[in-house]
Image (cartoon, rainbow over all chains, first blue to last red; front, side, top):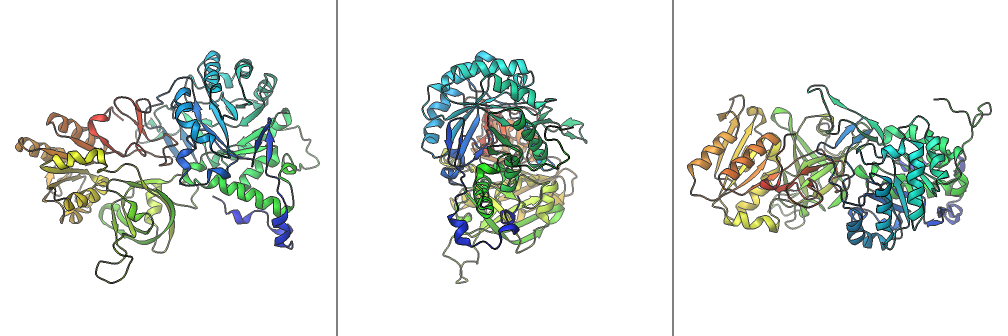
Length: 336
Length: 283
């Protein structure tokens, strides 16, 4: 992980420390009508149901927790091996193992409700009706602040990927889920498409209150001695620092294509990483894979963002989408 | 379980690419129970992103008893016995005294949680079955059983004599040590399951508890043998792990019955399982 002290240096070196301390960085944000004490959330599938980290970090310092993907019924997951480390990243094919919506409400939600961090529940299904069913069950629970519709898990036939790779189906499942949802609905998009803005627009048109991007990139690793895939599912989702530049580019593109707020995610391991997403247009960020190897990352990101804003005497909100483009580069043109 | 920055005291090379890493960790060492593990992070290497799960080999006092130093009798040192098998362990081997590393420990359920204790009390003799670096999980259980006055025997097999590391550490705690090597360089030639089978055959009247740690095939064979002879058997499993905290679900293995679907996490429900609880499907 990058050294946090390298952030926000140089330009404001001469400023008095007292003045910096008094300056409010305005990290508190409102997204889709939900108030977050800061813009840093932990990503689905990397933070369990929150309680697992309670002994390691102060969960009350987080902006929000997105819990492991929940389905209407419990899911057993994929056979081992499920993960494989790659250069600056990892492949996973967990297979959406989860306790199911009912058990989540009974056993996991009561703890999450006690926290200052907002609780977002990642939802998936194997059909539009199944997504709707899951949302309906979760609607019975008290203390869920928003849903994050997972239409982008690459590792199961029923993980929603089919919905994330056909704009018509994206629209269908988002509209159906939105109709029954009691709380704001974010849609987590797949990067495994030719033009992600098409799917962003489809989700927006169907009533999504916000977008999360990106989910993992489909990848593969092979053991050359045995000629076998490194994970049992053959392919898996690539996450970690390796995907960050592609994720930043996609956030940049989508933020120019839609009006609803975007939460940026993909390889964030420091405040500087988070700032890239924010400057590209994200209103909030999620920390994912870094939670596995450095559980304190999200807290450091919060502190680093605060320090950056104080150093630069900038409110967080004015950083959003503050990218300065070269003058000869028309903002809309992206070739890839 | 604590996440601490710890200092390397010693990283002693042993035979066959094995090392014994001693880390100063006064907060974590007193918490360790036999069979638990640690997740070690090697910061500054983006190609080794994830922490590495390591059996805790032993805990030690900072100063030997009677030297008049140290804080009472609480251990302050955690020892990890490991073998270079890939990039992560290669980097571990480069650690020098004074270097710092990050360690999450102790993790998982050990061998003598309440649910397993009864089996140990009922046994006439505990048989440790180790394959290769699996030996690393068994020293602390052997020590704690010796303190309880339980008779023990060690079956330890490896590829060659160079891989039979740590046997001398078991001497004070086990009655007899039976060795085997695949290349025949020491002890019985072949797999360790052969002398184990012979021992079970020759002592049919005795009640054994088996504690095993090693490669999947050895554990599977040991589990099958234990079942055939009606002996309870505990296995310490290993798997690739993403977090060690129970959240990535990357280390789940197939088990019988209910509980988190039909999978359980090696890091959280394990690493020690009843052998009959594990589904021994081919990896």
